[in-house]
Image (cartoon, rainbow, N blue to C red; front, side, top):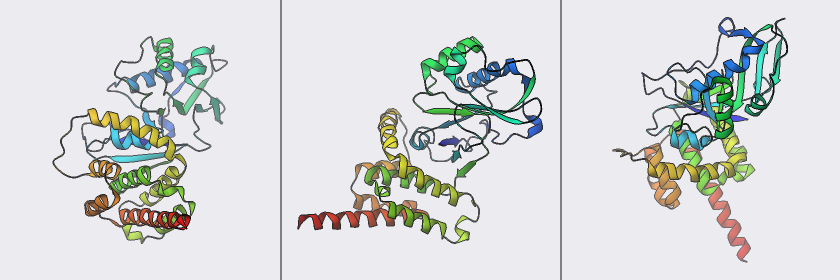
Length: 310
């Protein structure tokens, strides 16, 4: 699974989260207290407490780009949940210091009579939970914290997943404008449906000179990750985009400058030539490659259509 998050680096008064927790700072607790601890941490996160600690991610790239980065001045985090951290699970050090996993979900917490046996102490390493069901989450919080979900909270609309820490987390800041471009071109033209183009695109990004990523060495890998994600999840993102479009239209923001969100809307609503003529705004080697392969796809598609006419 791939999850996305916007980190509010532009707001220096914002809460900067800890993505990796040192082993000696992991919480130690009685087994019977684990569910109450998790529920309390979730309550603080979703209800906007000042002392919240968890990381909130979305299953949708579009939610982060459109809803949570309205001035395009923050960094995008991409978390790949692998065999160590998998969705709806708890990871912990057992009393004999072995790393163990336990399947856990809001539903299991709500309807079971405890997930641990005994009263030993354990050290909690991580938990990853899908909380994108408002009714289920509200009932879960009421059971363990006696406080429900606040009315303004929107984990369901955000396709939200929460976790304690994220080891496999990559960031994009320098090339964030290029990601908006990739997202818009893919939603409008679906040029990544062609596996050959995807392979060529990834190859060209991989072979870019190192100085292109001199101050952002992880962004190359993150960009490739997003290309692969959009190749497989475009239909899901189209559904989310329709929802985010309604949200965006209600938001009253006046931009005194051209930015990536305005370019995204231009690509969606205008024809290719008009959008491409404004591409000087987002002028870098990665964006140029995205335009290039979208044009190659369009050219191949037109040629294919002409052959069908004969």
